[in-house]
Length: 244
Image (tube, rainbow, N blue to C red; front, side, top):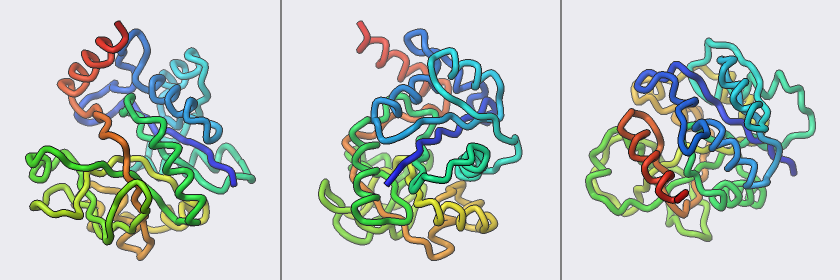
C-alpha cells in the first residue's frame, strides 16, 4: 500500500502572515517541515500552496511543490486539489502534514502510517498526553476525547474534538496531522462544511458530523505549532540552541 505526503501551506495565515517563509537556522519553516516528512520515508512528499514564493523556496531547498487555487477553506480541501492535479492513480493513503510544525517527530509520522495500513482505517490522526493542566482550558490547544484507552499499542476511535474541556482521563492534546484513505478523502471533500466545523474552526469535525470514524495514535511528543510571532521566536530559540 502506497502513501503520498502532502503539506498544505499558504502565506496569508491570519495571525502570522508570511509564516511559511520565516527562517530558523537559515531555512524556512516550510522547508524544515518538508525535510522532516522526507526523512520519515513513507512516500513521496509534495507541498501544496497558493503562493508562488513558497513553491520557489521549497524547490530551492530540494523539494517538490504544486500550485493550487486560493479559494480553499481548509488544508484538507487544498490537499485534495493537489492530489487531483498530480493525477496519481496508484496511491492508497494521503498523509496531511501541517506546514507550521518544524519539530514534528519522524517516528510519529511513521507510526501513524503503519497503524493506518495495519487496521485499514478511514482516517487517522495523532494525540499526545497532557501534562500541564492549563492546557484543558486553553482554546488555542485542540483536545481529542477518545472512546477507549490510548497507548503505544492501541488505535482507538475519537469521540470528539474540542478547544475547551474539563479534566478527563480520556482527553489528549490533538496534533494536526491526518492520514486519509483515498476514497474517504474524496467523500469528505464532497460534504459541505458542517455547522460544528465552522463554529469550532476544526475541520476534522466534518468527518465525525458525517459519521466517518477517526482513529487516534499516541504521539511521542507535542510539537510546537507556530501560530503567533511569540511561538515563532520561542521555537527559533529552541531549534537554534540545539544546532549549536
